[in-house]
Length: 382
Image (cartoon, rainbow, N blue to C red; front, side, top):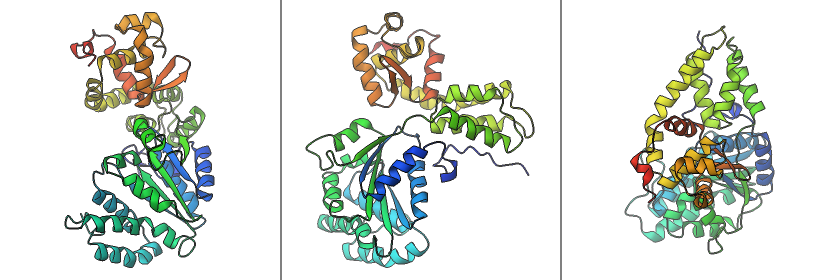
């Protein structure tokens, strides 16, 4: 029987599939054991959710309950209530039996709905009811920690999106600040500017209230070990192609899985993986991502486009006069634009005046453009 492709890239991976991150897992477990608030930052598709699930898995061995609440795209308090209610309603086993009567009573008492298929907070619920329902849900960790549960870790994923909901962070903070030592919270986000607005602004409720942890690229040695083992389990010798995989993926978690998945599809069991298979895999990966990368590129200002191209032209050093002049960007504006690109998780700084792309597929896209003249969209710096 043909083995299933061991490189999933379209969804969060299983705890045992997480590459590297041992240091981060232990740090998060230690902080959560101390009931601390944690700010977890990383670009999109960088493995935040997979890391949190691994933390939940490890903590669960000692009786800790993990609750993952995805806040992506919330616009109203009703949205927050629905997401939080569903995150508890999705727990299974003894937890489901314990929570169901409590969740049902919250729905009935406050005229909200989050447990049924396709349910959302009812439009008829009064604002006062919504706020009371939110506090009832937020108090569930305090209600059960140390009683029915050993401890609780709640992760609010894409936390920066609560900024769209007036005073939502105030309400969250006012509830959880009174929780006991059995409750820990992880606030995960993928937009540095917005996360800074929540945690670095003295006027916000979470100002200076969380231990920061930012995810970097995966260690090459750990990636090499994992990739080699997955191919070898089916008798495939990745051989010299491994170096090409590592240098192209650059430690990006999702892109590593993505490229390896394409390579797996183009290699055969009990045979060496060929350079031709790698080139075919890379071509397929680039073609699949072309429309998304093109849209991302066209959404950038001309100055941002030019700095990104300057990064590719001179080994990650856009401040080199020759690189800046080659793409027509004023050398005096490189610092401002590169800082903005780092803040947008498009570049990461690797040294003084040196940068690398966060997304290696975007770098390949920009390199492919470098052979053509600047399109008209790049001449507009607006």
